[in-house]
Image (tube, rainbow, N blue to C red; front, side, top):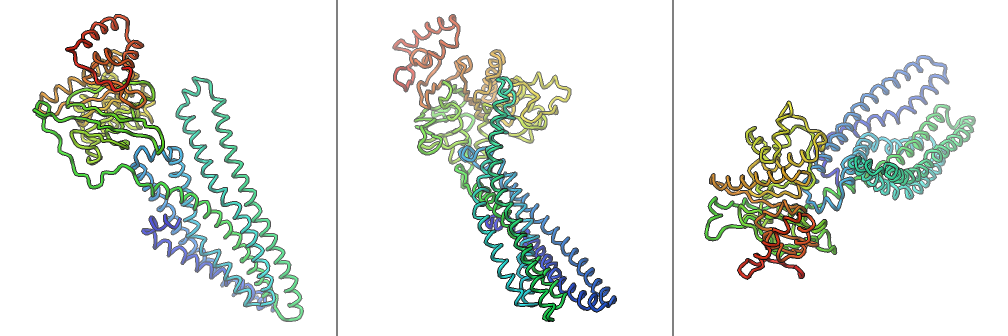
Length: 617
């Protein structure tokens, strides 16, 4: 909590000084009130002096008005500080989360991050507000009341010295048991957030498989687990107030008993006894509120540690000190030593220490303007491999280069502008078609947007909408079909003239005709770019369809993260057993029979040999 105050409290320092100062003035009036009441009783009521009663009544009213005025100022300072700090913490958290690489995001998990940026920040806000308003009031009021009471009579002060440690002991016992539960509560909330996110985002799947009862049971179990911890904390916390007030009331009884005897013998006045009772009540009530403050601060401390855990997490992928990379000249493709658009040099990657490599010792090279097809079974590492190109992950061993420069030397903004990625899961945000398409280039003209839509085979259904480019997009693109969402995300990647286009199984929802038209349009875009004096478009296509990758200049067959085969379609069909099995499972008999003839030619001595890295290919 202190770390958050140091980091975000600087601009609110004056509020955190003015607020407690105003509260301190209010407390001083609260401490003077029992003395004024004592004088009103002794000099007014006891002496039957109406003027004295009125005079002291006016003093009490004036003190109340002044106290309320300072209280309102303190409340405003507390609101400005807590809301301002909460806003800054949320902004810093969201900004920092967006700097984290996929590795850190995988470690924390989306539900946990959402809980931290909402519930945990709320807990910190509450603690800051109460800190400004109450942290000075109740401790100062408790100590001040005790000192004032002892100044009235030392004998009655012994009752204070007995009651106060008794309440402190109860408080310590309860808090020592409650604190561990508060940390558990936040973890239980993370679990509830995870189940909510899974159940709501996958509502269609849940209903399709009639799993509503199962999901309800899962949520109920998670909610019950959280409720059991909350109830355990509530039971322990519920002991505080009754025991404290019991001790306080017993103390008041003792004061009235002993004070009554002293009044009879003339050692104390009635007003002094009443003042002593008021101070006793103020002291013990203050201790109760201090106990409640400690509960709030304990929760806030647990939340603050979770917030600091995110803020102190250094991104594993940074571009600090990297200088802009000079792109190859347009004629580099036909030069004597053409520059590679993309190359992997014994690249390996694993998800965490000790885990098996998801990408294992991959080496390949793709020239400018060519197409790389990546195929393999589910879990073979296709998506992980292409994630290394724009540095969504960093290779643990080996290197990845784009345009002849290692990706670690690129500024991230430049690298991810050169490399456009179409993710496996089509993701759109609420807004309009235009606002989604201009993510890569906010200055893109309508002509450029329509050109990207034409290439992505999406212009037809966009033109059919009355609002065209300004047609609304719901959260997640729910008002579009799966194929339409995929085509819109492809169009979004094509805006801004990228040099490398990565399509991570992003045409899986398209029919074969649309898929073929899309690939043809991308090849034309590459040819046209070179003819117009620019760099040709280099394409990386990840797919499980043979028909999607068979026309690629180079096909990489992955098997458990390793390269099982590398070459053209004909070469791999002739020499790579895994690729042949994939083809036989997808292609028609007529296509296979024609392919066998091509394979016979490919296996002749004059045919180029495939680079097949796995034994048995």
